[in-house]
Amino acid sequence: MTRRYDSWHSWRVTKQNPDSFISETDVNTGLNQRARMLAQGHQTLSSLPAAILELGSIFSRYGVELALVGGPVRDAFLGMPIHDFDFTTSAEPEETLRLLTEWGGNTWEIGRDFGTIGATKNGLVVEVTTYRSEAYDPTSRKPEVSYGDSLEGDLTRRDFTVNAMAVRLPQLELVDPCGGLDDLVAGVLHTPAPATQSFDDDPLRIMRAARFSAQLGFDVTADVMKAMAELSPRLSIVSVERIQAELTRLVVSPYPRRGIELMVHTGVADVVLPELASLRETVDEHGKHKDVYEHTLTVLDQAIGFETDADGEVPGPDFVLRMAALMHDIGKPATRRYESDGSVSFHAHDVIGARITTKRMKQLRFDKQTTKDVSRLVELHLRFHGYGEQAWSDSAVRRYVTDAGPLLSRLNRLTRADCTTRNKRKARWLQAGMDDLEARIKQLKEQEEVDAIRPDLDGKQIMELLDLKPGREVGIARKFLLDLRMEEGPLGEEEARKRLLTWWNEQQ
Image (cartoon, rainbow, N blue to C red; front, side):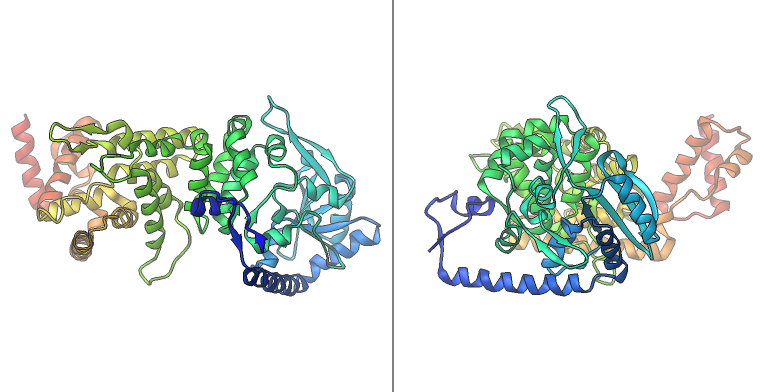
């Protein structure tokens, strides 16, 4: 019998049962999987572009080592195409620059201070980094870099064993001093050095553990999980931009829930997304309302399932939709109230949640448009509720569309994803209501292009008719016409002029 990896996933399933084992059948399955991975890796690496092999030959001719390293090697064994050509070398940056120039590539000093030189040739982009070690000063936000003297030494300083494999060029020799291939087969994230040392050297690796768990669908070992919990405060010395980049990549990964759960369980979310972690505080032991944290994770899963276009194709992960799903109930802890009848309410949690979302995303330095879009979806996520209870007028549908603007499709998807009730009848009723609303929106669009609703008169026409100069009064008059359009649909210019003049004279 062989001991099971004591990992994050096994913690979820067995509560870290130390007596948990796997059978010999599972061991044989692992051996077969290893053989498949080796075959996949050999096939992918044997098909490397000729220009890449030529680069390896140039370095070798000058007695310099060059190896494909990290993610590209990992992905090759997973049977995935290689998109990034990351290399490590014994050459220092000056010599690397010279050899890349001889290769015929257009070069740039992409990260000279970190020993990295970039180049492009025939549409291929390569980055070559000198063997190195990397550590953080306890009070510094920037890593201190020193050059190493061997490929094996460079690999043992990397973040995880599955990223600590290399293939020497041009001979395509696998170098795996840390057992990365075994961990790849097992589907676990393990650090080459003790996890506490690895994360203390580079605290960003704490975020990378969560991100790779979400990206690869892998577990993390118990020592990695423990180190994440112990050292999560060290993330405070890492630049906000780097943390934001890792969080973004986590959210758009194939399995974001895994990464989020890992962050929350280890306390990393208390540092990065404390509002999300606080959702656990809304667990109600009396069963008066649902578990908001678990509900949020389910909404995230379901939102991913709605990432399709009109033709049923999945264009790619939608960060705005996924982030809105994570943040949509973020205002509930601050708005929870116990009513006199014993019920629980969360009045205005949509508005409060939008403000909290804006503040957090600004602190994480997301761009203005992304912040605005996610916050707006959080603010609007309850707008649909009540549609099935009381028929909306056409003007109410128009206002829903206008308020959502370019976020309409995402808002509808978020609304559908927000239905997590186990009551099948209620779930069918809510989905039918959403179907009906979308059908009405489509009908109104065909009738009057509702997604581009504007007053029947523009600002220039309003100023000419009322003899006004640009200013606040023009905006008030325009709003009056827009409200008319919402309530009654298109009026036509002549009728709009009559109604505006009548209203204006009443105001005077």
